[in-house]
Length: 123
Image 1 (tube, rainbow, N blue to C red):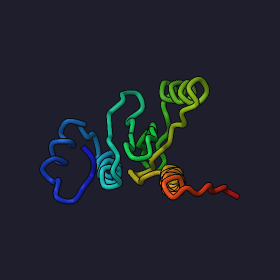
Image 2 (image 1 turned 120 degrees about the vertical axis):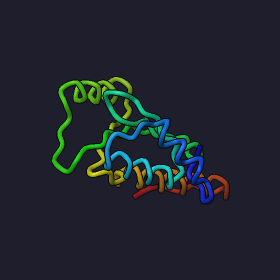
Image 3 (image 1 turned 120 degrees about the horizontal axis):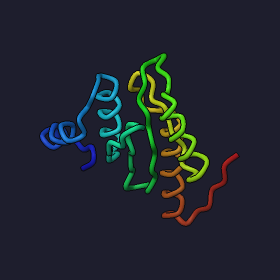
Image 4 (image 1 turned 90 degrees about the vertical axis):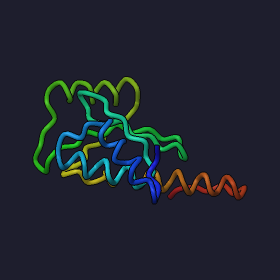
């Protein structure tokens, strides 16, 4: 289930299944869906998002502007980052994390270059 125009009915069902808890989560899910991500609810940390095109996986916790991670969330964040090398991103007020946008742009350019038979380096 990925965000595509003309999929309003599918998206409404998707939101119902994810069980959106507040306006910030709704805002985040809306943008993730529009960007083509599959969004799964995790538990202690809010969402696991997948981009099936780039094969990238991200963990995202949605917080208000001044919201803080609970001690349990800090522990789980440290576990993912230190033991599994999976960064956890914080979405403030439901905004899509800019770091994820940049990683996705790089992955898309890399895929395009590979299809064209060109190697690119980053400065």
